[in-house]
Image (cartoon, rainbow, N blue to C red; front, side):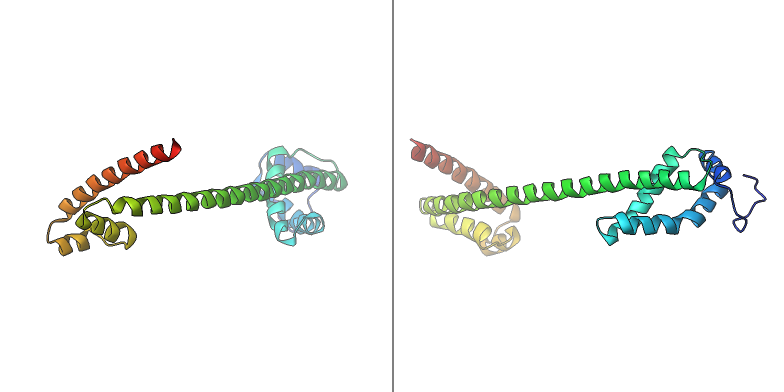
Length: 191
């Protein structure tokens, strides 16, 4: 397409599509000026939802960029664009359905996982409460304040008039002791 040609002058379909195939910017501008509203109207007619029309037009234009070839007449070019749009709509619908199915499966998995983990937490909570009875009272209080009531190590250190490092070290030893006791209890209940 000659560079002196402006968008005000009508562009033949062959000249425009040939220019588009050569990646001529003025040909793509002419394509957008002449066909965007038509493409959008076609997308509104064919799209599953009106909100998807803009995305479908954009995806159709992207496919046109990749696969454009010279067309002799406007009707052939429009039929080709309709074909591209149908493919885009089918792909878009499949993608939405896949996402929807995936989200349903994920939600179900999360619900099942949360139900099981809630039961496990409840069982572990009861087991931990039983194990706390075997700990010295000051250790049981420390575990209770930190993990049940949510005190920070700084608050626990101030309460015990010690350093945060000492509290963290003591909590680490107590966690290890509770973990071992919990695994022994689970082994005993399994037998």
